[in-house]
Image (cartoon, rainbow, N blue to C red; front, side, top):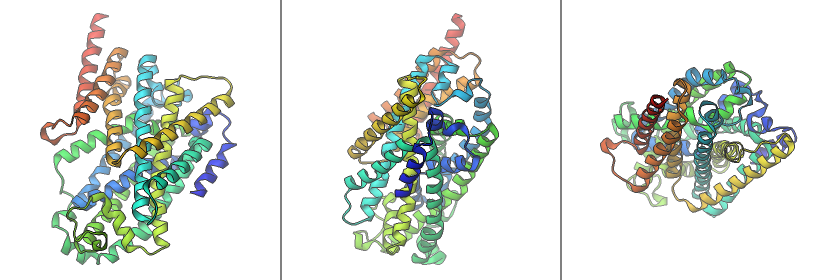
Length: 462
């Protein structure tokens, strides 16, 4: 954590403009950006979430991140070339700015509000994930103290260093996470639970199969995760930060491959080891004689707490804290960019004043995210609400801007309102949906229908 602050300090004096602060001076290489994308996408929430999927369904849980690979590669082939071809591309800082190009300022403002709210919530979810992991692992550390530590570190180095600090720290953090999983978590977990024979003996056969999954799981994951590659502010910032279109595409191919199969299988395998440990009474001292009654997502932290000696435990926790921070910092930068550029519409030729305002508002959003995290209980709920709200509100208007000739601004505006509004209404009311499908499928459907109908009506009037 001290090293992460050091990176922030290093870039504090090197950032001379908002280009430096928000898009890394547009000079970043594909490997740095690609690893940063993976670190952001497979952060603390997904790392713990994958463990939970491995605990409940085995290897088939890895298919969740297969949708990440599809999303990354589709964006590389479809989105990046079209985005790079825009005449205004070299002056873009944020995702909602493309709405002012495709549509109008009113539509861009609404897109900025949706994105800023979504990413502030996502930042909170990551800080809460890290705090829960820390407080459940280290004796005597309360959730609030852990939250303050994680929050202050993430906010301070992001405020100081901007996107360059975020991308370079993400690269370091991702290397830490990968090293922790490969050299500590997986081998020690495998040995401690009794190896392959014990895994075969304890787990049902379907846990070792890739077909232990329903079509609803595939559809729900696809509709939530694939579109985020087309509407994620953190991803657009990294496209803008790349040296060239080809470097950006290469970064997205790298990110996709690291998501699946590498991170996907490592995450679910650790969850499977935790399930074996639970069923063999390894967590009896924590009050769990078997897996019955356990929260699936707590299985992995319990396994690590049980099998790792002091020292290795610290290194493994550093790996997971890295995953948390790498997502929190990126989401914080995204929300800050939305607020400064898209909502306030701040423009000033004096780059130093613009830079200072950006840093102040990044700090304000970080403080808000920390307060929000202290009021929430469920990490997964916060994450999924944020994702669903952004995807159902923004995905269809983005596709409309990319593929429809002279799309109507009114169609995009109402598509965002009705799409996001439908999803949030269904989530809050808790209405049981047909076929076990997620709320944002209906939100995206409402967004699509309203876009097509209003766009056609507008063109007929003309």
